[in-house]
Length: 170
Image (cartoon, rainbow, N blue to C red; front, side):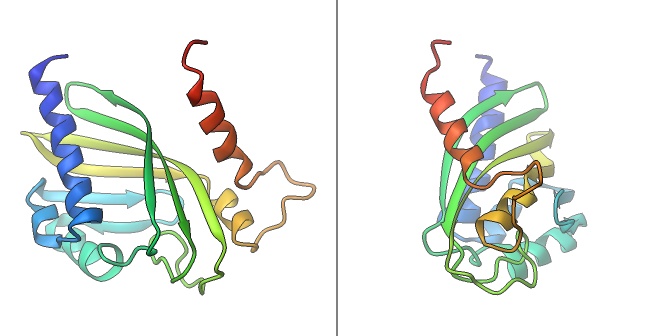
């Protein structure tokens, strides 16, 4: 793989490490441009501009995750100015998660959902993040939505993705 493309993947990984492992807002922001934005598509949460993203990370995201949050990589695609990660996040809903379930009190239920994270780069800095997931699946898993009679699923979608991903010889 091209060394320049490898660098984008490394920056992506460093950004995630600062967010989730080190829980360091200032370090996270060093990986971003001067005018970034973060957009969680299903819930319209995030921030725009340096100050907006900083505020979002500091007050609503970094250090505010469930204690047992786990991120499992499924796939990564790297282009000339963009990295797309397909991941699974799993956790126990033991606290309000403002970006994912704003205003929803903890249910104590286990959740596992596939997510897609699209990071766009400009001059080796992250200019934006688009994060996608199936919100109906999350709501089914925490018991706020009943799947009966609707074309939605709960944790089954994650289980099937894991099973299918195990057999890469297809």
